[in-house]
Image (cartoon, rainbow, N blue to C red; front, side):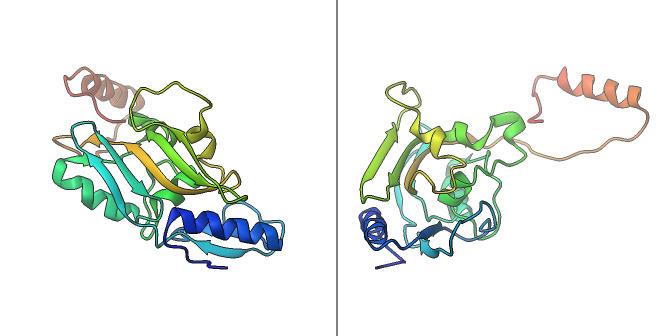
Length: 204
């Protein structure tokens, strides 16, 4: 059984073989959140790191389709020339797009852009019986069928191994900064009111 498959079809085939043999496997991207969840039995790691390709990027539509093993940092590099970003993710060095979604790892910018599940438009899962299942659509407006993408986010690979995703991205703001203020509660509330009254509302 190939535990380092290089295509979605190979991932599905590996899962089917593992099911037939009764061998538990656990999907691994960059391994940055491998301590999440609890495996009932010792499971072999099934790496999806080789699935790191860019499938499609439509800057005008603000969507990007990538394979799940793409490092989140590399996705940021792909989007940067178009002044776009995937702001919801809590990106750690080495983390992959699929791993971020499978763990439901939203970052601080969820306060402005919502949780990471809100950015997932379409997902392709490899199931334990060797199928590739597609949910959602590559368009922002899609209301057909069950909301499989939202079910997959945070599922830790229980429903299937994430092999490809389409994400909704956001424009990079003209300016970004963190700031802090001292003083009493009333002083800080007044500062907050002043900031919120300006034309450019802050992210958080």
